[in-house]
Length: 124
Image (cartoon, rainbow, N blue to C red):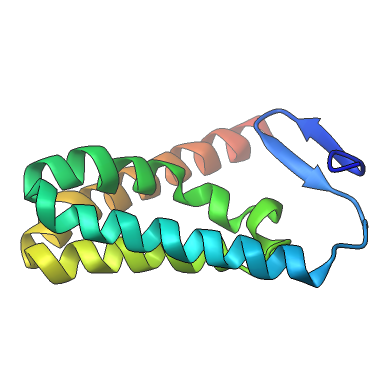
């Protein structure tokens, strides 16, 4: 059973200790590599505005999922693919991507973390 050993917890699927065939991990890694290569191929063809809107922003908004248990179970292959695509975006379109996409995203995340921390300390 493919779904055996997985429980749905909100947005995150957690896996219990289920033996995984190494061939499945290799195939998953290949699929991830091919998908990331396809997205990188699209980056150049879409141009900076469409690439950041349809590829960069969604990847940034979901990058936190790569650091949850879902990707760790797959040896961070998905994390490497996402970071490769984001790095390629900067490689193609330069510093403007960092200044206008990545830094505002980081600023927003830090602000959210500060708010959460402040709320948690006030609750205690």
